[in-house]
Length: 300
Image (spheres, one colour):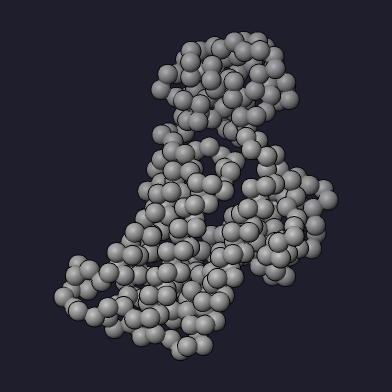
């Protein structure tokens, strides 16, 4: 089967490739990389059947897309790419370093002073470190990414968000003039934070086991024997629910306004993601539970 490849920019002809009738979109990308565009590795390519159409999924076969011999396909350069695993590692290593650096009360932030952080600030540092260490370990050993890469330019935006918020929060909690909240707030915040962290980890492990290694199989996530997974009875993305809960209780633990801002901003972004995933679940599975919300039980 011969396919003509044109550029999305100006519909300029790039060349032709020959593939088998049973080839997938990914096979076409490999042919383009090998024979036409040595600088466009497959992850950097977007293939479309129409000039302003949607990008075709790598696993889709040409037959399933009704692409016949002589068809025209449009190629778009997505720009330099970076793997999602490396993105996550960079996003999460930065906040861990930033926070622990501020916890040491460096002169660059606080000037010359001799006091050390108090008990609550130390507890907060431990909670922060546990959270981001967990995220790093999950990235290495738990997460299975449905998308291999993302544009390199997004790495700087994502890292700026996490790194600068970490420094903003750490500066206030570790400040020599920081005033700790009451003991009840500390106990409630610490217990709630611990529960949410365990819940978040439980959901990530369940989602990992839902998808066989090396595949992009999608199934309806349902609770298992782990009690933390029961939140699936109420929301489609309980990992986001627990994530928001962690930062909500961290805010209670520290009585830190920047931490609260971080929790609210995170809730907004995770709600956008959760609503999108919720819609996809309902669209893909006709028997998807109708009582579930996206991220907040009975609300959103």
